[in-house]
Structures are given as C-alpha cells and as structure tokens.
Length: 386
Ligand code: NZQ
Ligand code: ZN
Image 1 (tube, rainbow, N blue to C red):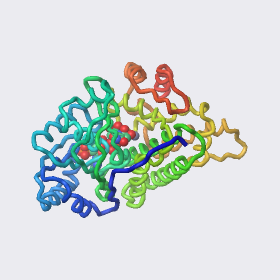
Image 2 (tube, helix red, strand yellow):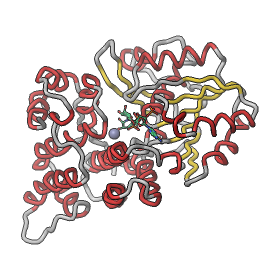
Image 3 (cartoon, rainbow, N blue to C red):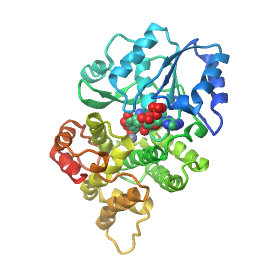
C-alpha cells in the first residue's frame, strides 16, 4: 500500500424517511440566509421542495432559491450561484439533487468567498481554494457519490472542457432513499452503474497487489451488481435502493482509494465526451468501459483476472491468467446488456467522428491505470464503441 493520511469531514445521515428529522437537527448551527439549490424542477414535482421549505421556515431561515442547475453543470451556472450567494450574504447552501446539483454547489461555495476566478486559480495558478460557505447535501439521486468528496465535475463551455474542480466538502449529507424513489428507472440504473465504474476504476489503479482496499472494493462491486439486478426487476425496491445508495457513498468517500493511485481513465474519456455531447454520465461509461478494458486487460492481467473471478463470477478452472483477464471485459459486456444499458455510441446518438477525435485529443490521460494510453489509442477505443 502507498502511505496515506486519512480524515473524513462529512457527517452522514442515512435512512429511509429521515429527511426532515435530519435536516432539523443540522440547521441550528448555520446562519440565517440559506441558498436552496436544486435542478430542473424534480424536487417541486415530488414534494421534496415543500417539505424542505417548511423545515427551513420553522427553523427561522430566510431562503433564496437557486434553481435550474442542469445535468453536467456549467461553469456559467456556478458563477450565477456565486453571484447570488454574494448578493444575499448567504450563510449556508443546501444542495438538493444528484451529482450535478451537489457538484455545482461545491464550487459555488468557494467561488462566493473570493473575487478570484476559481478555474484560473486551480488550472493556471495551480492553487487550491480557501474555505467556502458551509453547505449540506440532500441526495435525491444516488450513484455519483458526489456528496462524499470535494471534487466537482464542471463543464466550462467557453473552454470546451468538462473537468474536475476542487470545491468544498459538504458539512453533512442526508441520504434518505424515500426522496430518491421518484427517480426514473433508467437513471437509477445509470447511477448505480456509475458507482460500479468508480469501484472498478479504483480497483484497477496501482499498486495492484492484493490489499484491504481492494478486498473492500470487491465487496462493494458484488453488492452493486446484486442490487442492480434487483432494481432492474423493481426500481422501487427500498432495500436494494438503500444498499445502492450506501455503495455509492462508499465508492467515493475515499475508503476504497486508501493506499492506491486510482485509474479513472474511463471517467476522463466520458467527461470530455460529455463536454461535447452532454451525454448521460452513467450511460457514457457503460459504452466506454468494455472497449477500454479490452485494451487494458493484458497490461494488468492479474488484477483483471481477479476482477473476473471475484466480482463477475467467471469460472477460473482450466483457464490461464491471461484468459481470465480477457474474460473480464466480456463478462462486463454481458452484464451491461443484461441490465439494459446502452452498448454503443450510436445508441447515445453520437456518430460524428470529429467529436470522437476532439474527445481523444482533449481528455486527461491518467497514469494510475494498467498502462498510459496514447491519444490515438483513445480514438481507436472510441471508434470501437461506435
Ligand atoms: O434536474 P432535476 O429536475 O432535479 O432532474 C434530475 C436530472 O434530470 C433527475 N432527478 C434527480 N433526483 C430525482 C430526479 N428525478 C426524479 N426524482 C428524483 N428524486 O435526475 C436527473 C439526473 O440528475 P444528475 O444530478 O444530473 O445525475 P447524476 O447524479 O448522475 O450526476 C451526474 C453529474 O455528476 C458528475 C457527472 O460528471 C455529472 O456531471 N459526477 C460527479 C462525481 C463526483 N463529484 O464525485 C463523480 C462522478 O463520476 C461524476 O463524474
Ligand atoms: Zn462517475
């Protein structure tokens, strides 16, 4: 294992039906002016908005709405939120949604505390933002685990990049599966696949010696696969949804990454594809993963073989390590098909070669994966995804 320091700042309130009680308990420690941040309106349709407004009213808060945060949130939207927060002297941000709303608020929190442009600070000056406005996250769509870390993924339309930005950690996260049950089945599956992707990308990082983080990762992946099968049958299965919500948090709270340099190459490719096409994150990953792993399996055969046998149930008897490694992308493909996710870029409506070339030329190439890819190889992988 690599050396590490570990501390964890996010208080987690977990449990079906705990939303209002958990928020009531948290609110007294924050100031009066609250920025209530949400997406395109699902929280109004589902009644979550009214419930939260009531809890905030009883707690004596003055609430300012910041709605319309889009999937794949833009840097312009971050600036809009920061401006609102400055104008109204916001003391506390309540982010209510999936990864998009939570990510946007992480960066609003720090941008609102400085006149410096956060993108310039982080990418050009290689600086890190100072402390931001405190914020809490109410997760209405699980999968990204965005509530558990301080990395946001933001689309900078001017620069043509969807890239990571550091923002604030949430002070607390509320995971009440009852607020997630209205999520459309397609998004439930897509979110859970995102969790599986996080765990796989962590597992395939280095070092690839057997270690506790990897064994815990195997347990998380097996759990996600088992519960994904349950939600394919019934997306309102509260027990399965609860397991998936906690697996999502576990995959991104840093525990599985301890002592490892993670890979996340599939994510880096998907993010750029998302920058140019606005495709759904989990769906993009489902298309990219198998082709990417066909390219990587031979470079880390031991770890791919172990993933095949310990997680995807590939029968080891009579097969060499290399055969088992190569069986992993095939087992993953079969699973993606089984859960009804898209398998090609064409299914996502992405057919323009120029977009694939731009994605290959601008995505971040990671060093933690089985081998460092060239840009031409990324393009080849994307061609194979068509
Ligand atoms: O916008 P509204 O109207 O709220 O609708 C949303 C949105 O259309 C809807 N939704 C959310 N909760 C709902 C609901 N609909 C009905 N009932 C509910 N309870 O779901 C749609 C998708 O929401 P979104 O937040 O965009 O999805 P997701 O949670 O998958 O987040 C995707 C974003 O997270 C980033 C992705 O790149 C993408 O931008 N990621 C963030 C990560 C992180 N910070 O750690 C890690 C991930 O790898 C990922 O990159
Ligand atoms: Zn992801």
